[in-house]
Image 1: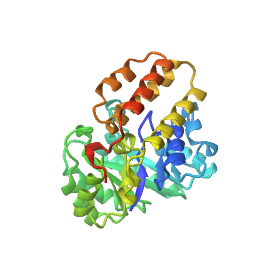
Image 2: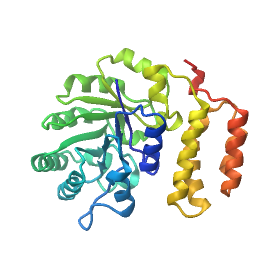
Image 3: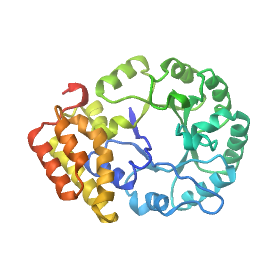
Length: 318
C-alpha cells in the first residue's frame, strides 16, 4: 500500500511536511495545500515559500492547484515544472462555500461542460503528470456517473476520490458504494481518500477493497502522525517521537513567525487533532487552548506529556 498526505489548507504547509518527513517518513507523496493562481501572478508569497524546492528536499511533493481558468492553471503548472516538479494536482474537492461560489474546487463539478473544456486545454497543453482530486458531485451521488465519463477521456496520473458530496462537507459517511463503482468504471488509477483515522478503519476499508493500492490520509494523520507506520509496520505509539515531532514544529514556526500569537494559533490548530492521542486529556486541552503566551503553552504541553501516556485513537494499541 502507498500512502499520501492530503493537502489541508493552513496546516500541511512545508514546515509540517518537513517535520513529518524527518520524524516518521512513512508517506510516499506529500500534496501541498492548494495554490490559487490568477492572471496577475502564479503564487503569493506564502504559496511560493511552500513550493520552493529548498523547502521540500527529499520528499516527493505534489503541488495542488485550485483554478477554473485553464490559462492560469497552465501558467502555474509550467512555473512549477521549471522548479523541477514532475506532477501537479487539480483540486476538484474543496467544499468550502467561499471556494464553491466562485466555481472552484468542488464547485466546478456542477459545470460539467466547462470542466470538460478546461480539462481538454490543460491536458493538450501540458507535458507533465496531472492528477485530479475530486468529490463525487455537488448534491447528488448520481452526478458522479457523468463525471467519470469525463475523467475517463484523459490520461491522468491518478484519480483521487473522496466519495462525499460537496454539500456533505466532512459530515455523513463516505459513499463506498459509489467508490466501488468508480473502481470498476475508471480507466485511470484510483486513490481513495476519506475517514481513515485508525488501523481498524484501514483494515475495514481494505477488507472491502483489497484491490486498492493507494490511500490518501488527511485528518487521521493530523491526529496520529505515525498512522501509516502503525498500519504497515505495526509500530506502537512512541511518546518521545511524538514530542520530538511537536517540538520541531513549534521551533520552526517560531523561526518564521513573529510574536507568540501567530505561533500559538498554528500549534493550537494542530492540537485540535493531536489531543485525541492522549486519553483523559480534557483539562490539558483546556490549558493549551487558553494559553496566551508561549511560556504558558509550553507549561501546559509539558504537563500533558508528563502526566499522560500516548495511545492510538480508539484505544487500539496494536
